[in-house]
Image (cartoon, rainbow, N blue to C red; front, side, top):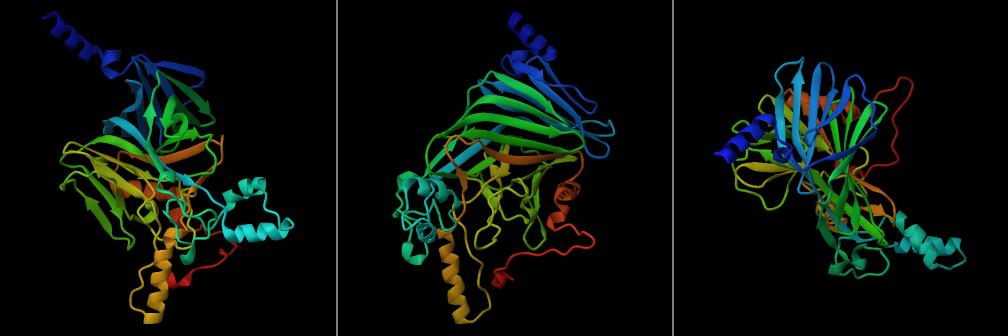
Length: 406
C-alpha cells in the first residue's frame, strides 16, 4: 500500500526519477531573454521561446540511463491549448565512413606543378579536393571512370556505427537570439563528441546535431540524423510533395520497416502531421551533400515504422548516386545515358573529415501548431521557395548545366 501511494504521489508531483536521472546543467553561458528562456527543474530542461507570428514553442530535454531524450516538443498559437508534437523521443545518428583517395587527374596536374614529384605530404593535403572519388564503391572500376589512386577498395574500408551516449550533464548557453543545449558523451564509431539542440527566437526551427571528430586519417563520411519514438495515432501521417509537385502521404498502414524508407521529396522536406499540429524535418539547405555530376533527388528524408506504436523520421544520404532515366530517345543517346547512369556510383561525394576537425551532422525540425501545408510554406520561407531571390538590377547566372536532364 505504501509503495502504491508513493508511486501515486510521484506521478502527481512529477518525480525526477520518473522523468530522467539527476541532471547537472552548466548555466554559466545562459542569459534569459524576452521570448527565449530556459529552466531546469526536476531533472528536465525546459526551453520556451517565441516563434513566428503568434506561435509559442516548447522543447523539453532530459537524460535516461545516460541517453539524452527529447521529453516533449509542443507548439501553441496565441496562448491556446498546447499541441503535443512528440514525447520521449530519442535522437538517432548513424555515420558511414570510407577512405578518401586522390584522383589520377589530380595527381597528373600536381606532378606538372611540382617538378614531377608527388610527395606524401602533397597527397595528404590535396586528396581532400578529390572530385572523382567514390569511397563507398567496392572494389571500384578504373575502366569505367573511377579515377581514384590505390584501387581496388576493400569491403573492410567501409564502417557503419550508430551513436551511443554516456552523459549525466548538459550545458545551456545563449548566443545572441539563439539558445543551445549541449550534452557531452556522444560516441559513434571512430567519431566522438557531443549532441546539441539549438532554438532561435522568432523562428519555429529546432536544430539537432552531432558535433564530433575523429583522429583517423583519410576519412570520408555520410550520416543519418533523426528522432525515433514518435507515436502512431489514428490521425498521424507523413506528408510530402514528390518531384512532380504532387502531394503524397503515408498513413502507417503497412508493415514495419527494418531500414529507413527514403522519400524523393521536393525541397528535401517532409512533415509529420500530429493531430492539429505538425513537425517538419529537412537537412541543412545549403550544406548537405552537394551534387557532383548529376543532380538527382535520391531521397534525402526518411521515415521508419519501427512497430505498430511508433516511428522515426529524419534525414539521410543513400550509399550511391544514380543518373537520369533515359526515356523516349534514340538508341545512341539511350546507351550513352545508361552508361552515365551506371558510372554515377564512381563519382559520389562524401564529406571530408580531416583528423581533429569538428564535423556537424545536422537535421532541422520545424515545430508548428498548424497543418502540414502551412509548415511547408513556413520552411520554404527560409530558402525563398528554393529559387534564387530576385534582386533588382541583377541577373542570376550559373557556370554550366548538364542539359540532357531536362
